[in-house]
Image (cartoon, rainbow, N blue to C red; front, top):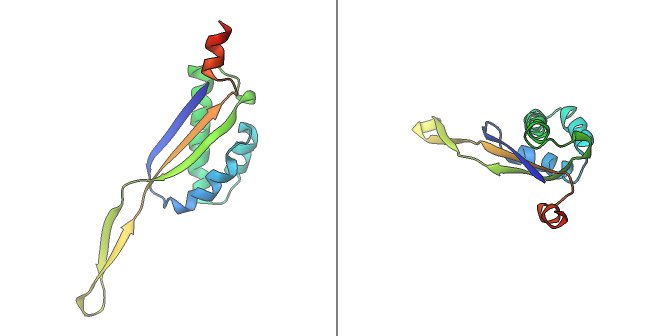
Length: 120
């Protein structure tokens, strides 16, 4: 069973979260939560929030045990870009791109839905 949690329109550049997302893929949830929550990066705070939400979804909606879950997929995708800018020397416009991202985390308990159907 796969459980999904998404944080949308987070005000952080996607580059800052890619490496942390790659690092937690395939980890058990307890280890991933510990790694992410003690990270000093801004991406750590956003991933902690999304990971806790995914765990809560699994426990409440699907009645799964949090100890059996692993991080199947952790992705930081590009969000919309706010285009801003300032004027520089001699009246030239200096563009600034304020980036945002979407954080998507998928947890699994290791049992496929197809296997569950064949057992019944």
